[in-house]
Length: 87
Image 1 (cartoon, one colour):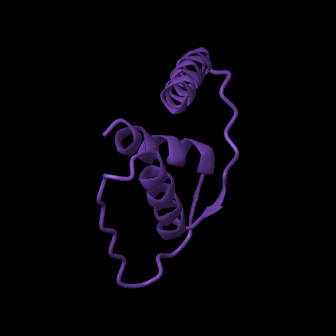
Image 2 (cartoon, rainbow, N blue to C red; image 1 turned 45 degrees about the vertical axis):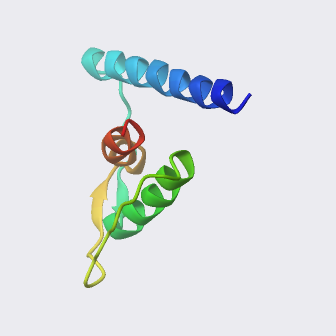
């Protein structure tokens, strides 16, 4: 049952990514720009990635808090999440 659940989540992600790609190409993608702290975004991503794949070991070292950037948190998460979850 866990395998089916994981694969269903993965399939949903793939479909969402395809739909987002189509929206982007058609110029219909809405971006929600706001201040984002990349260090917080990456830390959250690593926690989720390790829950998804407990055997994965990733070390993230950030020596000082990073200045916020303006971006779309959902899209930036997607950019960083795809390689981590497809490990």
